[in-house]
Image 1: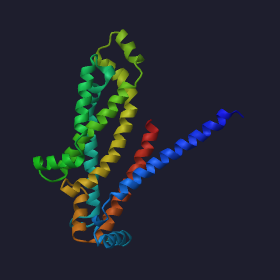
Image 2: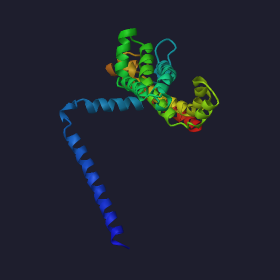
Image 3: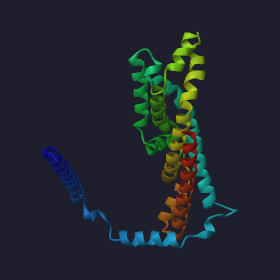
Image 4: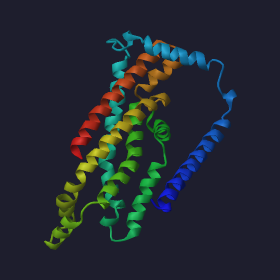
Length: 265
């Protein structure tokens, strides 16, 4: 065995320990700057109460035919996520072709499209929801608009990358046969990118379901509204059943969406 083969593993080990030490220093420095006095004296008691509510939930709140209940809140949250994803999945397609380099002759055109998508992505869902609450009032409609507009930025970016990475052979063949731009997109581009479009849309839907549960905290509809009221009223058994409902809903959607995406791609 040569000396080079012995020296290289030693160098690799030293590099790994150096990287590990740097990461450890960063974590220690970050946690050392965390103010311990930021935790309230009641933090442990509240945490214990929340876990007690999860293990002893208010089962009567699951369904109430005469008023607000868990199922209506979860369905409202699911509807917000579905509509927001549906809106963004359709509206972002023109932006995706606008931002794709291989769909535009001039780089400045695709660069402008990428800038617009980046600009839309800079606004978080909560900021969007606050703006739409002021514009259309509190409720689910504001949540749908917030998720729909915000998702255009992310889905448009992912869609444009799919268009850029596709095989240009079919498009060149159709151009040679005299097809127009609409025919090229319909018969050569869409069949290639559609599986990835659907996969990204389902993935974005999973994210929007989680985001929709938070938007209700600021008045944009969904299960977040009764959750914040239950927390304010210290109704821990109701907090517990709402958290359990959110966990079950998100888990089921993740499993279904993951299985569908595996079949598509």
